Image (cartoon, rainbow, N blue to C red; front, side, top):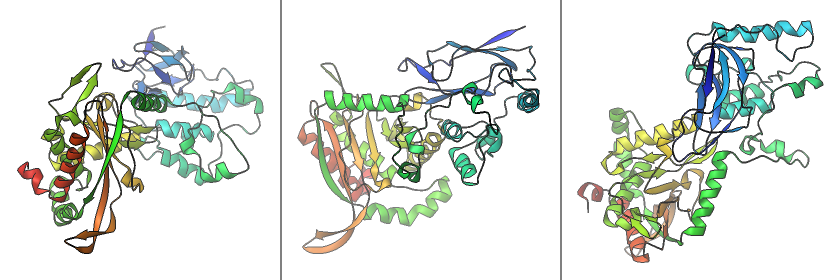
Length: 424
């Protein structure tokens, strides 16, 4: 027997511990090298743990839901072992045959094919509906199963994978992780008077902790302004086709907001600063956090050195962040740091909000839906596409004058995009 240990990946300094989600293998089952054995949830990202060796899963040291730390041993693989023909919980010979088939499949898999591997949100939804990977066709990269694949299978009438009548068999199975409330359908919650108690994910708990910390430690004030988006919209409409053809990405509005924010931060460095005890740290770089919704909750990946990026570079990175957030692939490094953040509630239809500062930053810009509104220009009432901007700031280090002028600088840059080129 040759035992290979399965360990927790190295976590970053800012992540002390993580939570095991759900084992994809049982002891005695064959595994292929690089086959994903389990996902580990930190307060920032979900990490996949691949099998370091082919063989048989000899032992699971830490069960689903366990709290673990970097390099901790969570399982052991017998690299010379053979898969058991009968699962340990099987009691009848008739049940042995079906158990042998799935156990043999991983051994035949080639070096780590990902076919049949479920993404974190999909795995939770499959557990809730008692579906196996064999019942859901994966449409993701390398055949991975996405949340949409599971919803499609459920809508198509896929039957639960449990045996016909062993109510007693349910306790023997691995317990399903609690269903995330966001996965619940409206009809399900309106059927009778149901309630569901769901523990917070590490990400949700961390977001709650940091936002509460922000409100308790920062002297938060919000200043507002309105922006006529017509100049940006005209510029975008004029060049969007050529832009996409040249750069392979669509020209959106977020790149203009990022550029306008950097333009203002250069003029008013305090907005780009942070507080450390009784010191103020002025940052000589512009790392802009972009708030992105994901199946696990709100995440804020960072655009490093945004002042050095072109509009095309910014659009490509934002598209990449959105794709990674959807698939749970954002790395810890991509979510760490930042000197200023932008939250775009307008994509969901928000008209106005007061965003909460993401500590240790000292300000955040809230962008909202652009709507046609009646405004007065040169004594005439005209219709213009207007957007309300809101900037929350820490009044401990940012005075009202700097905050208001900083937001005005963003407004002026958006209403006259040439300012961004001429640095005016």
